[in-house]
Length: 438
Image 1 (spheres, rainbow, N blue to C red):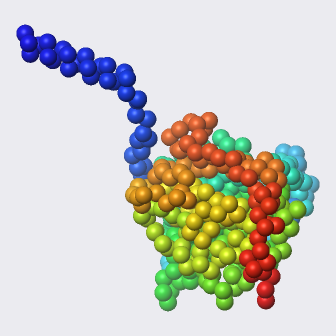
Image 2 (image 1 turned 45 degrees about the vertical axis):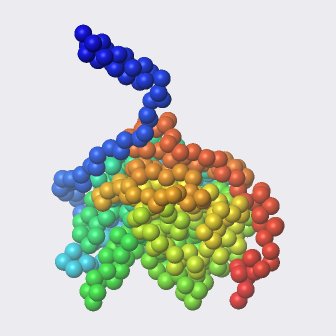
């Protein structure tokens, strides 16, 4: 009898404790998902495939696509009404060989001038389906969807589905696109996978380590990436497709290359210095930079890999008053305070690592402890970010886990532009002259 009474008492205490103690709401990471499988879907050689669009200078956009047929023309017909193409642009085409693989004909055609915030209907190569795109606004607000390290897994599909529900103007991708890793047909399947989104909004990308694909004495690095994803480097006076800049609705965005030379004697450094020195903060009060390898990273994965680039280029970014830095590479999410030279600084940039789009290698789940003082939020989960720049002084950043419904934000913060902070005025001549010295 005493035993039964004791058991009953213990059960009652357990119930009372379960009621009185707070319920644990720790996030449980979902299981990994396999690579997507793509069935062979033969098309007429002249029909456009892997259609995607990008910005190409003021009021212009570049339409890119691939055809299996070598004789297909590089023309784009377009207009503001379905099926009525009042305008036509002629572009250029290229192709490449990689070991035993020969690409199709890769077309790049610039259209414009275009009206801001307008839907255009277009057709590639004079035949095939009609696509439509929406041009970015000419003034605030403007919204960027951000997801790096995409790949071609079930989580990639989930990320793209979430982005598709987002009302955004431009997609920023800080490196590691297809994870083809020398298997060139994986570039083709990636192009088909992202076409529904990439044909409707500009995708502005930069290279990651999985784009290198260099085989010594046999293939050059970035051959596939450069041929397929042409960015506005010439329009921004860059000599390389691996780094460039563009402007949209009051935002100057710089896309840098983590895997090309970046020291003070490099072409990239010289170009960056010249580009930042020309930024008119009255015209573009926001300054955003994106590249692949993070400089501020408290994850064990890829720890310290960005130190060389950081040592060379962070003084330029600090002198220019960069507001936000977006990176990938680490397969997790992390957001910092405003930071510079390894510590919190109210006049530094907010750094966000978002290399968690859906890669096949899995999540980077081990973090450094204790957490650095500059790190605000970090979590190893797949997801995407949304950056809504509301006006010249305020922007709203949110990060969404893939397994949450779209209205649920796992991390969010209002960011104030440095243009209204007094930082640019307070910085001494010594800290800013780096931009203007010979």
